[in-house]
Image 1 (tube, rainbow, N blue to C red):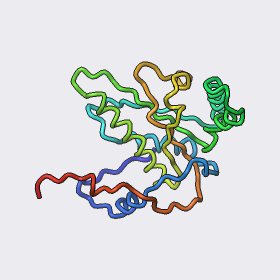
Image 2: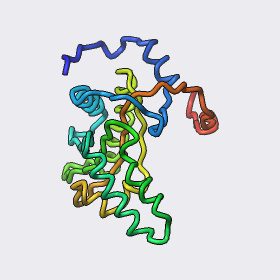
Image 3: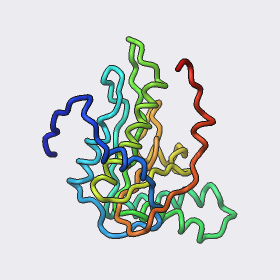
Image 4: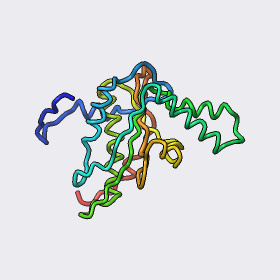
Amino acid sequence: MSQIPTYSPIDPSPEVLEFLAARRSPSAKLMEGEGPSAQQVDEIIHLAARVPDHRKLGPWRFIVIRGEQRAELGQYIGTRFKALNPDLPLDRSVFESARLLRAPTVVAVVSAPVECLRGTPEWEQVLSVGAVCFQMLLAARAMGFAAQWLSEWIAFDEVITAKLGLSGREKIAGFIYLGDSTQGLTPRPRPDVEARITRLGD
């Protein structure tokens, strides 16, 4: 990974503001191409980890799913779905088996809270994990790739998460799908931010 330059904390960056104002996530099901290389995925992850992290606990980790592993894990997911939904048509299980094939790389971001006797609440650690997921979207987009943050049922199924090696209090914060996309990203409706602001003072 390239060396990160040092900036003054007051350096303005209008181009970053413009970038954030236009941010949108393309759909994983419309991704195509080879997406980021293994080295680029590593760089995206390193950039994503540069988030607020009280006491530098690093309460997160990453599972990178690429190549044939997507299909192999997908078969496990399809079998698990069929076991949970035996009365549904077989094509639903086939669809679930292909879930991870929507993008060339899928990164599972794992919330891995750390016991901290000095008092960093687990809630703060969970917030840090959410920041990691969003920062990964920004880093991938800044590198010219498509990225979407999804969870879906597989993030909450204990059998699937055990297959991925999660243990204890660990949870899947999200699956980040990384690839290429040529779809146009038009603005979409957003919540009324002004209605959600309480101002105290001038």
